[in-house]
Length: 383
Figure 1 (cartoon, rainbow, N blue to C red):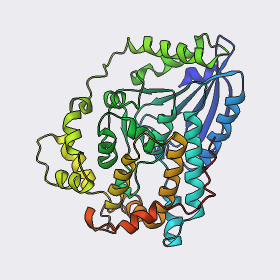
Figure 2 (tube, rainbow, N blue to C red):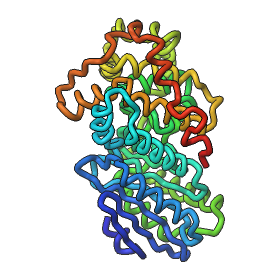
Figure 3 (cartoon, rainbow, N blue to C red):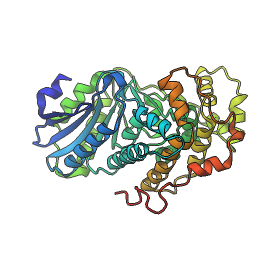
Figure 4 (tube, rainbow, N blue to C red):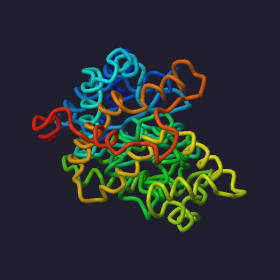
């Protein structure tokens, strides 16, 4: 992205994240964060989370920074999720005990996500290519989520024995009908139109419009008022959206809302039974169904319970709930076996602890939902 580098007033690099500032005609700066692990599809590790947190907090206080952009290196992904290998190795070694590695990683990742949600200044995520798991956690927190014709967006945690975390307890429950539960159980990959429909994206541009967008940001009349900057950025992106060569198209999820609501109705046992006997000629739905049924029964329970939270919890309360569930799932759930099958041995033959939905004891789920911290929960005072 040569135009950005040419205009950069400052560039600094950690090993896996690049921070730049884009000079603008207004005299203000745009801070640009580029996830820089192209071979790993820009998956987040703890060092990246920490580097981003430090820089974003500095930019939040800097009056010269009017806006922040999050981007990913390469053309395949903004961010395909978290780098879970360290979590896996620590959890295997601990044999059923909650590890410090899990506590630290999830706490700091969720604090970063929460920072983005509450940033104040405009935060734009260029959600091109794969945006999954932890990457979607970053995008969900941004004020301006831009997707393209290549965007593929999903919460695939059910396939590794986890559940839709990184704020999923908040944003999945605010989607139309039963859509959040469907996405959490099936790991369905949304396109740009789908993401806009469910509220995970705000704007649509083409991949080739990226430099045009940065050029327009460089000439925008940025002000000292965040609310004005939000409005001006909205207007600018909307103008670019009206000129795209490749149209956004229609959302399959929007067209299928009523059917999805019927499939996801009732108890978890009802849903699994319905999906197990589903007969359809729709290839996308067959794939979603097969992905769900190959997933962890413990993960099904967690995703289902997550939707029962509804919209009564605040964003901070959602992250507090998730931190408890995530560290316990690494210790006592199917996380280790899911990661082993998909990423370590790559045999894609996970042997889940329980064979079906009804075999999962209530005591296992209650254990996962019980905070290992008691009253001293790390996110109790999230701010």
